[in-house]
Amino acid sequence: AARFIFEWMGHGPEVIEQQIVYFEVLARLSFAPILLAALLGFWSGRGRTVVVMLIELFCALANVVLNYMLIFGHWGCPEMGIEGAGLATGFSAMLGLAVALVLFLAPGSRARFGTWPRRTFDPALFRRVLRFGSPSGIQFALDLIAFNLFVVLLGRLGQVELEAANLAFAVNALVYLPLVGLGTSVTILVGQAVGARQPDHARRSVRSALGLAFIYNTLLGGAMLLLPEWILQIFAREGDPGQIEAFKQATIYMRFITLYLIFDGLYIIYSHAVRGAGDTRFAMAAGIMLSWGTLVLPSFVAHWLGAPATVLWSILVGHVLCACTLFYLRYRGGKWTRMRVI
Image (cartoon, rainbow, N blue to C red):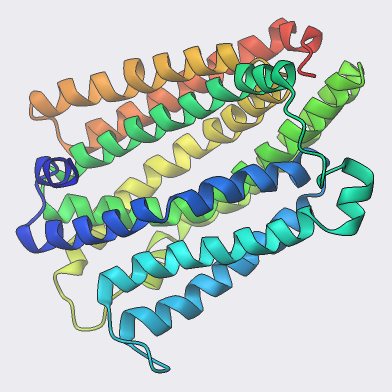
């Protein structure tokens, strides 16, 4: 299946072989990040996000060290290349999982939350976890698939367009991920406020997050709009004149990112707010409809008609605008204030 997917993407044979190796290693070790995510939810739900940050930071640093060891063969390790990169990612998640387990089973956690030795299965609570958690997981998976299909369509326009898109999305990740962190804080605060039957407190949390998102987007968006060449120099390769054209294209793409960043911040805040209150079924249905109806389908049609990359980027901006509008209306409707998760 992996070979079929990568061949459909239209990459070169050498690249496909490397992709398959990396993908297979990650698939074998995927249990670690899945279990780690479940354990991190224990602290996120309690508002102990500093613990989550420290564990994630530990994983990132471990990944850097293991990459150095396994990719290039340092400190007595064999040189493993792309396979080493996959192993480093999996092993760093396993180390983070070990740290999370130690903290989860620590005497303080056992005394206060009964994390051990109590192992009683609660079917009713488990069903509620599935009821509210499954839609979020399904939505995230389908959103990720939809976005990756969009990136694949960009890559099929040509090698320059593919590299330019990768550069632009690398910059986008640096800007986008802090907004996701802000959205996570909204999920936690809204969930706690709604659970305590304090919807006004939940609304204040959302308004505060919107203010922070506005300041953040203004500063980062301005930098991306005014200094795109300087930002892209982070990814420059010495002695590679072929990268010049990709940089020119990426500069144009970053203007689109600056535009949709405004709406993306609003979408993240409002969508995390309604999900935090337990409105996950609507979030799933709306997310699937938006990802496939306003992003994937129009992008396939545009690609089939031979449209340039700028048209695909315009579709992406329109998709984010639609998502922002829909979740804003859902938030304003107020149904989320009457939901109960536990």
